[in-house]
Image (cartoon, rainbow, N blue to C red; front, side, top):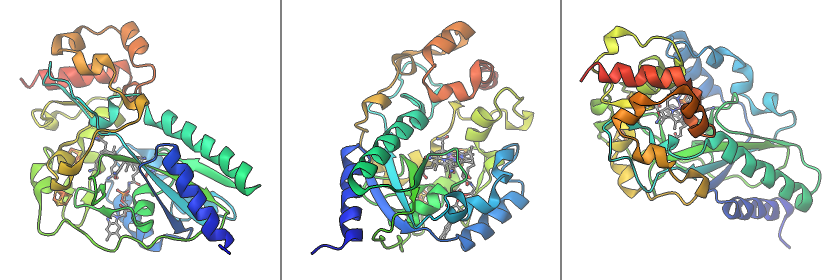
Length: 312
Ligand code: B12
Ligand code: SF4
Ligand code: SF4
């Protein structure tokens, strides 16, 4: 007879695949001591810049049992966001993760469905789903669940199909069978991402200085000014940046995603530079209502477009 943990584990992985998650791995919910040290050093060196939320809930971030009392397992999901098409009408660039609808909402909805299915099938379980905005070290859990390795560009990379994936987790008091952590690192002697980063935000040792990353300037600074010393360095990125992933040889294996809600918005695919420049706040709010671009707000997007255009 199949033991219960094995049965539940198989059931969860099948349910994740049915919901359209591309990968699912499971790790034991333990305190992350190595990560605590790396996170502390990163914060001490001010690599979070103005992202003050990264200073909050340190204890919860390194310990799933503090975040979800009674937690036994961390289930990690990967969701491909590589778009089928990109904009050819402008040289202003938008990160590939932002072509369709906002992943926070799309993935949270899926996790809610998963929770309902599990409660129906397995019974009363306690669990919470997270994607991006909670104090969870998502990349670390993905590696611990055997899904891939952390590249020199800081991203979680799968050997099968690269790094253009979102990461989500479900932390539960359910005991499950655990995957082996991903033990290898397939970066080898390559340094393409370090060499290509336009703002020199990547140091050896997989350390990313968030406060130097174009993604930080164009998204996290919201409506604040971008420092003058960054002029001429953005390589036309107006929202996020994919350079360290675009140059990665493992992303030759990326395949377009199959999530309908990530289908590119027609405006993101077709806008010219002039269309971006002429965009009104009203139209912005209407078009990008469900898009990740709303995080930068209208003024942030217009600031980015102007900041890049002044360089050209
Ligand atoms: C803050 C943040 C940012 C900041 C800071 C980036 C950074 N590298 O920390 C900014 C705004 C710059 C940013 C940019 C981007 N981000 Co971001 N970001 C986050 C967030 C909210 C927290 C990350 C964090 O904790 N940073 C602190 C540092 C210390 O932790 P870390 O980078 O995760 O590294 C940990 C592990 O990787 C591990 N580790 C690192 N090195 C090593 C080495 C060994 C040997 C081991 C064992 C472990 C290990 O230790 C670290 C501490 O635990 C996460 C969501 C989340 N809750 O996790 C998304 C997240 C990391 N971002 C994501 C994405 C997609 C991006 C961008 C690609 C977006 C874009 N195109 O513009 C860029 C990529 C920039 C880059 N090269 O990292 C995805 C990553 C998906 C993936 N495949 O890896 C996440 C997971 C969001 C999600 N839910 O999908 N991001
Ligand atoms: S996302 Fe761009 S700016 Fe940020 S580390 Fe990667 S290449 Fe550098
Ligand atoms: S570009 Fe090279 S060094 Fe950077 S993450 Fe990819 S394989 Fe690793």
